[in-house]
Length: 103
Image (cartoon, rainbow, N blue to C red; front, side, top):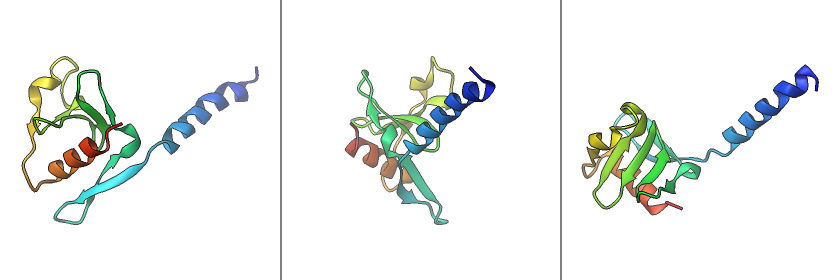
């Protein structure tokens, strides 16, 4: 196998992953900056949480109105740092969107 064939496959795979993204604006902040969620990333985990990609890899507890940022804390303790979602905030718009569009 030639050198170019060895690097062509990983590059092609990276390109196919990027095309799978489907970013949807769920809210704009006070400065008009859009906040989006990758609609294709929304899925329900075996633990009942809704996992998705927004500004960070996140999870949502739709019943308790809590969002977790998975990469903000170590992998063992992220569940200890949930953020209660306040009405009328961008996080509320994000929570409502992912909970309504979970696969």
